[in-house]
Length: 441
Image (tube, rainbow, N blue to C red):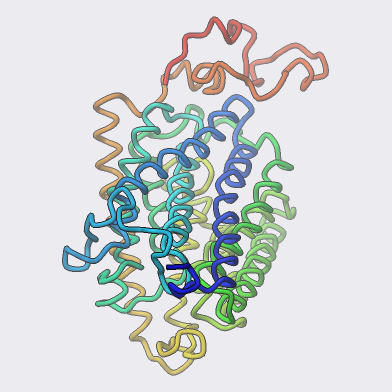
């Protein structure tokens, strides 16, 4: 049987192939985004936490993750079966809608990868790399996979029983990563010098480049979730662009009003906040709704990133303030701005749907956030007791690049134009050459 005879649409397949590549590119983009935000002494470690997530999550997904997330439900809407463990039964002519099932599985894999990588920003500068490598596959299996099944899998309780809407990942991606990041913050504790030392981004051009790659990839993330080259994909594409723009402008407005300076970091963060919020809603709201959702996320998240100082949790790169808060905003506002034109039925409060859809969205948000937080906290505690999750004080002071990876991102003599290395540089003068440093994970 040829693929054409099996019902594969070549246009839809071509678009989803491109969208899958775009979403995979988001993880290297995230690595640059996060890498530019940390100090010079832990840049490579930050990049590695994202890149290793690609390999670790892929192995888990191929072994059993896809089957548990998208296999036929066997647990009352909670989990799928193992019929496709090891990708069994997914022949090249197997079809999901109008695209090959193998392609659909790969597309969904890229979502799982970046979700795990997002969490790394919450524990930047202080997590053991070895512990992170244990955490990622366990977390993907116990947190991401069940929530993906609830939200998108056949028979999942959020989709089929509750009726909450999530087009491209507000619940499985944004809220799980944000809530899980908060849990790990509490397990590891704050960085040395938190609320005392300035911990500014070391390379803002790198941050902007990473944000640009994320924005570029996000079109595959959102518009690709239509699973076809069609009008819904076009609407999701435009909504994604619009929300990213208003998120950027909203954040800059707050910075100008509050601080007197619109910043490049604010522009990058605002765009990401708008993109986060539109992720669950891009296939449910009109263009007007997308503009408002992006703006709301840009404004609210710009304030939310400062909550860590008041509540004393060290979310290093604002995973909680942007992804959890932005994901909650975007998921809840579906209950306000959803239109029947986009959803094919469900309507939000402003379009005559009353409070029913908003209530469903709220239940889904609370359930997913609580589940992700509690399970992640448990995973983190077990790993911490078994092998230690927090890097040693000397490792953290010296920097994880040198002490863990025996590498440095920069030639500091050149970076400092020949100036002597100081205590504020990433490699103190007392640190021996990389080949003499004992490597620890």
